[in-house]
Image 1 (tube, rainbow over the protein chains, first blue to last red):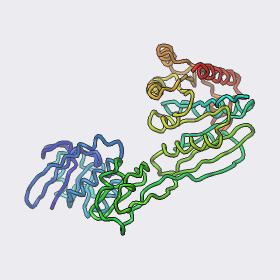
Image 2 (cartoon, chains in turn blue, brown):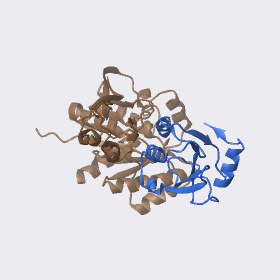
Image 3 (cartoon, rainbow over the protein chains, first blue to last red):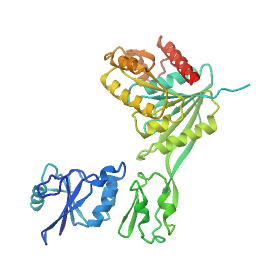
Image 4 (cartoon, rainbow over the protein chains, first blue to last red):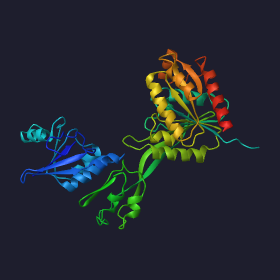
Length: 112
Length: 292
């Protein structure tokens, strides 16, 4: 299963980026193969408009089964994400990616 | 006889709640006592001049913007549309194209570049323009529908309408939105002079500076009206003096103005100094515009 985190950095110890549309990176963890990969989304900071839909397009290409983030996607991004068969967990801000993963495993994250 | 071109005055502020509506409605009503005057409420996201203008509704027209609509059957899923859209208003998710009409800037790029013609442009109602007359005063209210995110297209359409149907009215006052972003620039783009209404507080000064910078950028002559004069401090006046910006009038802080205003009343005929202030404002503007 592929799990994507909105991340402010590129390592397991990086903090969760609470924003969906304007997250700098996605850290993608495959818990079957234990592979970790990083997707750079930092180009989005040049976008005055439509960051949410642009990032939604990006996550569609990653096709994770689970998305873990902070505030949750905005309205436009949420509309786009409905097209994906993906579970979204929110309120993981102020956690490292590792902590967020552990909390997710223990069922402590709120699902959207 | 040679007609003078109309005098177009923008009332803007930077900071919200400083008195744009108070000044716009009172200036327009006062000037209309002696000559035909136009008042246009361009604060399309929350127009409120209508609270102070009582007249006869002449027309209400629907205003539209053009947005692309996806024709699933014609679409070949080539992806050109989503790569083209600078605003990410059109995105492709696998075999689905999603159009976000609030993000769309009606640039037609996706529609024109679609090789299959699968994104025809369609009308989408974004708001209304209402025309009201009251004696010598023509009042135009431009109102954006709730949920619409873009004020600029409607502001442009309102300017076009004014130009076409009321271009000959000698005095034209445009009540602009607060702030310093695109809607303000769109509102003030064809005025001759911009009045910046502020209050003598640190907040007023901070946002006044931003508004002055914005107007400098688009080469508009400006003057300042200090509302609620007597509260706060003298930093706004010092700033205007140092920056060489004329202070057109100071409207004294007066509880009676707040009371009248909150009851939907105009104040120019009830508060003694008000007509002098309005006269000073219009004379100063006429002097600056004539010199240019």
